[in-house]
Image (cartoon, rainbow, N blue to C red; front, side, top):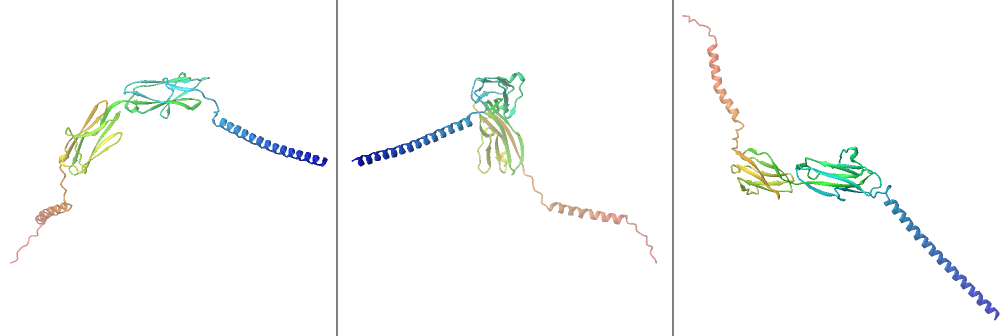
Length: 287
């Protein structure tokens, strides 16, 4: 009886030790997993901090004429616009830089700190699409841009008079500038030009409207009008085309034949002159 109790006690102790061993192993596994997870999370956090934390925190925001984002400014030729750049939320003196396209604008010393302005005067059609950018001096990535949208009616130019021979090719090039873009058409003698597929060809780019005429005929003679129609107004430019008669081709052997004919008239006269001026020795008759 005593032996059985002793064996039972030993079995309980062994079971408890085994349970304790399993519990300790499980605890160690949980601890390692927790430590691994924490280390990974801390590592990721530190990596994100390193990647996204700038060398110097920049909370400043730039505005131009009160706007915080890039925008388009409508204007017209001959007008003047002022662009005022200011720093918002700054904690110290901030230097500002202005750029016209990629070129830096010269600023006076008192027109650089915290607020800076540029004046664009005598605006022309060529300024359409030009951008002005204000940048933070210590952090060029902080910037804001303004693009000029110069609105103007169509402007046309070109060679108004052309004279060509019948059978040759000719191009009437009408240079055009317009904003907004204009609708282009060709007229002949005040009527819409009737295009012939093998005779006429039209090419249009952002800056020109071209009419090509292949193998010009007498019937192509006349006044051609390049017409540009926009929402502002309609403009026309006349091109006067004069078609001359085709020059007659001279055969290649004509000159040689003509030269031979001249020789046939010149040689006898020279021969006569030689006979006339050659001294003759008198001959006496002996009887």
